[in-house]
Amino acid sequence: MADILAGFGGFSWAILAFIVALSIIVTVHEYGHYIVGRWCGIKAEVFSLGFGPVLFSRHDKHGTRWQLAALPFGGYVKFLGDANAASQPDGEAVAALSDEDAAKSMFGAALWRRALTVLAGPVFNFVLTIIIFAVIALSRGLPVDEPKIGAIKNNPAGVSELQAGDLILELNGVPVDSYKAFFSQSDTIEQPTVDYLVERKGATMAITGPNPSPALVDRVSFGSAAEDAGLEEGDVIIAVNDAPVATFQNLMAIVAELDGAPMRLTIWRADADGQGATEFDVELAPRRSDLPLPEGGFETRWLIGISGSTLFEPVLEAPSVWGSVSYGASRVWSIVTGSLSALSHIVSGAISTCNLQGPIGIAETSGNVASNGILDFVILIAVLSTAIGMMNLFPIPVLDGGHLLFYAYEAVTGNPPPEKALRLLFAAGMALVLGMMIFSVFNDFLCP
Image (cartoon, rainbow, N blue to C red):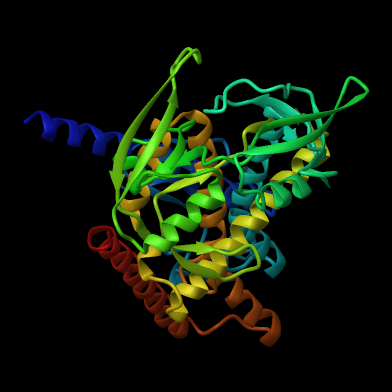
């Protein structure tokens, strides 16, 4: 019974986290439609958060009914002339409108006004992501480009002569003038100790210290073999099957060579007070996963479910406001291009369709991320906001991209698509979207 209650509690937390994240994203998306529509003179009759029976509603001075509905898995804005939440035209209602009122509907307003209103939803999603990452950058700072030590993490090698504030000039005699160069050089070093040339308070010093890229656990992936085995952030893997591991690159090579075979990891874990440490063994089996490549595309590899980190924390500096916005925009671009690449590889069969999560999988991820802390949860909201904005731009009827496609047709031909054709296209679009949702739900149950 205790296990059942614990499982129910975890599931309830996941659902709650998912609803909170989705509600924020949907509210921003729909508010984009609403406010830009209002600016363009298009009347919004209903702004709904959720679907189904209405739990609460009120009318504002503009005549819009704001409502909270019972099923909190989406939302919509119903404009004048809309037949439903998908903004399918209500031909009879539009025909009955006066010329003055028709100009305030989604089907009588100028084409550019309608296009801006539809486009605003996804754009607001992207803006939300930019704002979140910009605020994070301003509050926490971004790594400086020069390879300067901000802090030294606990490690099996113990205390070295390196200090916070040291500027690393060389690794094993190779100059490193940026963190990019530092990472590139550190990845090639396999021995446990390294010769450093550093600058400290204006003086240059040669120091022998620990390898800057040990098999140090920076993050543990949710649902991974590493999480199941109990690995934690800050752990250092010092051996695999009793064979010493000097670097994270060394660990990756060993995992690849074992080709999915179970392995025994020897873990070094610092005590909570940082004054001591313990060593212990765990057993796990790697799992196959599709990973994006920096140059584009994907590769399938055996993974234990951790990401690595260098021994040193970089120095962080708060960027300018413009720099933080630029950083947020770069994250939006990265999410969009990565998502499109993943979708294209799923469609082509290059990677498994199990990479496509449904609502249950996303809810589980939301709960896990929320349990990890508010910052990770806010970042998840930012990522999902861009993903939802991007998907809404797909040229599928019932989605915003479908409406924009119809407006493009109208701009070229001078007339909107025939109402009968619209009904058929909306039905086909709804069938496609529902089919994709059902497929993703099956993935949630059937994929490992």
